[in-house]
Length: 187
Image (cartoon, rainbow, N blue to C red):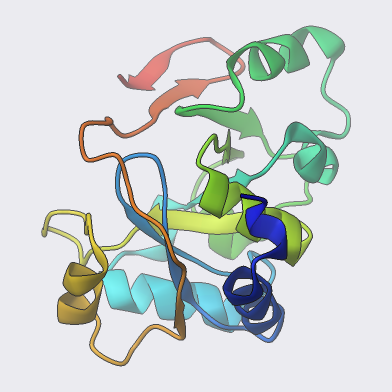
């Protein structure tokens, strides 16, 4: 199925462009997402999760090209590890070139980027027309949601939309690595 053209996905993409917060399946857990440039939406996600802005957030996209403005100015040798590991469960901490909003980047001089292999979130990013904030759908300290019922329990009436789809409950959260050093932050 081409999720980008699914009527529910197209509706969610329109909601995202209007500043909404939506929930969607990713490889391992359900995520909360919004337009990374919509500060109020990002702040809403942080409030739902009870998470400090200083911690920063991950951005997810359908393909590397959607991250072009975030990657501008990087030398070609730093793009190779991205191309070799995407799409898939690999999040890279990429040096911020000044394009990433501070409310997404947090206290860091890098931005966390991932190209998802999950067809629903990839379709949502394509329908939206760019990357989305992507963070696990759970208040800090509680297990990430693996189904829509848990999202409703955690955030009753507080999320603007819910995508169709399921997660692979056997999958692990993405690896996080620093692009400059190659260091693994989370295996």
